[in-house]
Every structure is written in C-alpha cells, then in structure tokens.
Amino acid sequence: MQMQRTIGKSVSIKGVGLHSGDDVSVTLKPAEEYTGIVFHRTDVTPGAGSISVCASAVSGFQLCTQLENEHKVKVGTVEHLMAALYALGVDNVVVELDSEEVPVLDGSSEPWVALLDKAGFVEQDEPRKRIKILKEVVVKEGNSVASVKPAGDFGLHVFVHYGSQVPPQKGDFKGTEFEFRRQLMKARTFCFERDIEYMHSMGLAKGGSLENAVVFNEDGKPLNEEGLRYKDEILRHKALDAMGDFYIAGYRLVGHFNLTRPGHEMNNRLLRAILENPNNWKWV
Ligand SMILES: [Zn+2]
Image (tube, rainbow, N blue to C red; front, side):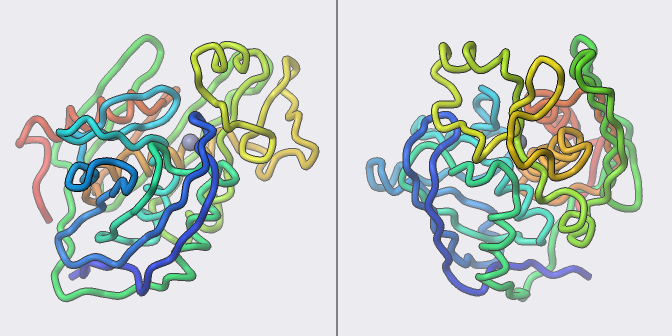
C-alpha cells in the first residue's frame, strides 16, 4: 500500500510571473493527511486566499493553467510546480504566494525539484488514494486528440508538430520520479519568435525572456545562446505540462494517456471527461 507524503520542512523561493512579470515569493509548507495541494494567496483579503487543487477549479488557459476559488481569487501557471509535486510523490502541501502567478523560474520543473529536495519528504500515516481508469475516454478538438485507456500504471504517449520549421516529435514517458528526473524535469517552456508580439498585445508573457523560455526563430532554431537542453525539448516539456495538468485532479491517475498536439485546455477537458462519469474510474 502506498502512503500519503508531505514535505519535511518549509522552503521558499522568489521569481517572476511569466505572464504578469510581477515579483513573487513562494513558500511550500508541510500539510496534514488529506489536505491535498492547496495554494494560498497572502496578498488578498484574509479568508479568501485558499485555492484547493481539483479539476473543477481550473478557470482559464491563457497559455498556462489557471485555478480559481469561489471568491474569484486566482493562481496561474501552476503546471510546472504541479508536475514536480506529482513526480516526487507529494500528496499534501500548502503553497503560499503573494501574487497571482507561480514564478516561472527557468521555465522548467528543475528548480522546483531542487526546492522539494531541500525540504525533504515525510511519509504520513494514511494510505494514498488514486484514481484508476476503467474505460477508454477520448476528447477531440480540431487536430488535437487526448485519450486515456486502462493500464497498470501511469504512462504517457505524446505527439507534437509545430509546422514545417520543427520536425514532428513523439515519445513515451512513465510517471516515475526516476524517469522525470532523468528525462523531463529540465525541459523548458517555449514559444516562437513570431508569437511574441501577439502575446505582448494580449498582456501575456510580460515576464518572459531567454532566461525562462526557449524561443524558436522562423527556421526552427533556438535563439537562446546555450541551445536546447534536449534535442526534443518541446516534446518533453509537453509531457511535463501534461503530468502537471493531470495532477490537477488532486490525486494520481492510473491509466495510459495518448496525447496528439496537446495543450493545457485539452488536458483539462480530458480530465473533466474522465471524472464526470463515475463509470470511467474508481478509487484504488
Ligand atoms: Zn509548461
């Protein structure tokens, strides 16, 4: 039987929000059994700042995954932290922050993994509950398809294709901590040079820079001096995002996912489609 886990002590980090450009301080705090993952905004009216992670708290996808509570208090760009919490097996934690967006740090999950390692981990006294997929569920939109099938453990197949400049990429990933550390955690968020003006006109990516994102030019070459961290960094980042997006369920999912041209919105639509029908899943 797997037991619930939290972190060993409080740990803090500072950074900027990718979209807001605001400075943000974050503190991760240990939490009791059955707390789940709870974001807590310290910069809003006392009593209104807690946002519990669950599929129905997702309120928007402006190039990130955003959660909202009943007081309309939001927290954005949660996915890279959620991916690290998933991979390192953290069930219960309070994430305190003083702005509307989780800092982007270097655009990957690696700084979150380092912070969690610094906190350490504590096994708790209650068993972990997981969501086991019982039936195939498929959602489609345009040329994006997201599906899940029953399987003995979490698995992920991802296919991405961003036009002629970058060759199509596909790969299979497991949900284990070992694989995440080895294959996924360093993969950074990315965009194309041609999209930057549009994002800025929408008030997005104000905190974006070559320090926290890979930017591809029209020839599909990275503008970042240091180049890519993995040849298929785009693919791996999409896999990392998906792991974070599915952990928004608040519980670990047991099933095999197949994602063609995924995005945060498709990931959440699949998650909701799974959870809305009680015949699709059971607790294990
Ligand atoms: Zn991402």
